[in-house]
Image 1 (cartoon, rainbow, N blue to C red):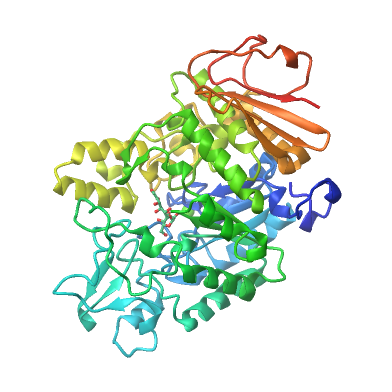
Image 2 (cartoon, rainbow, N blue to C red; image 1 turned 120 degrees about the vertical axis):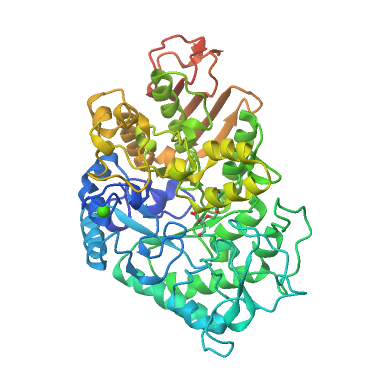
Length: 570
Ligand code: ISL
Ligand code: CA
């Protein structure tokens, strides 16, 4: 539970902590993917009433806030990241009254609500774009980025995230519009002050309703390089250039973020976390430094790309534990200027149990899930637990293209077929396709895992009979029970929240060991990231309290595979 702000009770003495206390530093946030959480009306799609019904489950988990993936009106080309009306709810998810009720009931239980804010682009079905494409002198024309073609081709060579070119030709006015994502996600023109004002109005409308903050989708892409120059790097398989140097972290971005903060967040108790791909610590620090007055936290994506090659996520490359450790260390350090976020996955990433460890048995799944939970969430920063992580959900075993729903995977596969690389692409999709994380929440072992009474929009993982909430409730050694304890600890222990981070054995390729300390208190985290046992002398800790432990091993000389111990030192 959050300990300041709404609930008021302060456990941590401000004087011992030389940084500003905030509610969002003292709570664990649950990322909830509404489409796959719980379906209450039997249409195979999760809905807001489903979230309301499961609030007690979330409360018991100990989380202090929910980040809801987009629930706004949307034709769903990119699962809600293509918004056609910011001030209404997608009918499949419910109504604005359901949203109000969710907000009220969540708040009654001391759970805050953070919404997704998607303002780099809208849907092409948003009224602004419908108007914009009508004529060159339409008042909304300049809400988007329109250009003439060059020599019968696109205005520049930019590749989009989802399709070959980032430009789409529109016959009505014989011009192209920019879309960094799908053709149905035209980029807004942030240079236009009217666009900014309209967005600020909408943001304030939600904040006035009482929501507690935003997760800002690709917020560091809103400013584009002046003149939209061609990219110069290597070409993608379809001959375009993926050039974040021209669309991410541009100078103007900082002006926009400062203005946004001033116009919408000033004087409010809300929290803003920016999703910021293509950011290194140098750039990241600027966003989160309190004196810059831009964002409270960022989601840096570097760790999520630890296995991506120079051609992007689908080129899967090997990595070592020391790569992971140095990434985490680098960001623990960088976020000292402000505050950091912690997560193993989200709706865009594969399941961590299918990615960062090798699972060979049910016992190892349970043990490794607890170890991963400890390793990440006892670092310094706000923990985000992605739906299903608390029961150890894993990647789905898709067998055909028809089972996929994610535009990114589908478009990539289509391009790969053209390039004669279908098999390679399918293997990459199985490992890293975004649908892996989006399969329905597994509540029990009944049909469709208790998620719905109808065929779900995306198939249920076949392992649901074994891996589900009801099973986990019954077993006192389950991942779920462990996560409840871990979350409660992370959200209330002052060392876990504000303690200094110090790493040991940095070069070890099997162990992740770090210490957290605050004034006279400290604890030590030991994680064996390997399937192999590890000889490790722990005699000096004999008799000290074990805060967390994930297996029956009393040896002080060795750690079992995926074992973790958290030892209270003082
Ligand atoms: O998903 C990715 C890799 O698989 C990322 O490159 C992702 O596209 C990028 O981080 C932006 O993600 C966000 O904006 C997208 C949306 O599709 C994602 O779901 C969202 O998290 C466009 O709005
Ligand atoms: Ca439904």
